[in-house]
Length: 267
Image 1: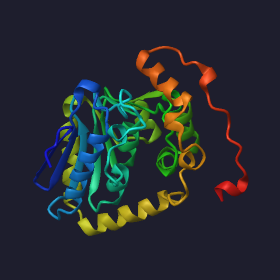
Image 2: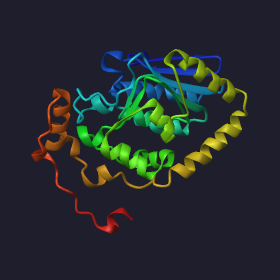
Image 3: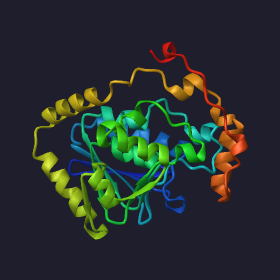
Image 4: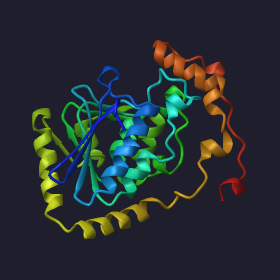
């Protein structure tokens, strides 16, 4: 496969996957996630690979989330691959490091906290935008953040859609290490060397154990698909996406009403 949206190479036991759309702050579209799935599956099946590094072409962003200029009801937005990038990151036997330099927003933030380690530069910024831009992100990937930084902080990050500096992210436990941007690669290399010095199979089993603890709600039906399966085509989703693109206030009259949910619906 010829990659257009990513750069991918393997060397010295390390697979480097770089989102290469700097003109849109490395926002991801369907083609991006399709290509990432191919690269991640290749790395997972290669026994010479000990570590996978995910990064973005700098200097502005690791990944700024889904490309909101794409129509969310189309394949161009969501991609054609049946493989979830987040699932591949969590299920591959190798450890995965997010090397964050710049914005890690929306899907970019999820990708960073789904990785086994997150190493960031001091100029990095983290946050979620879903409820503000009309992206119905729900499901275990959202709830998993509570395992990383706790229920209160996870709800704050997801529901208030604020942005956090790298230092604040370190204090929250969202990242493992923060260094100046000119030392970022050196710090990630230090993590790689520590990983490569340890038993690959034991690290794999430890990763499985941590994943099992963090996936208690994984088999539940995704709330957005259960209660508002056509949200992407709704007036609210369209209004919020356009308001974001046009940098204008949102028209609250387009908001959908609360859903009436019985306790048995989520049992």
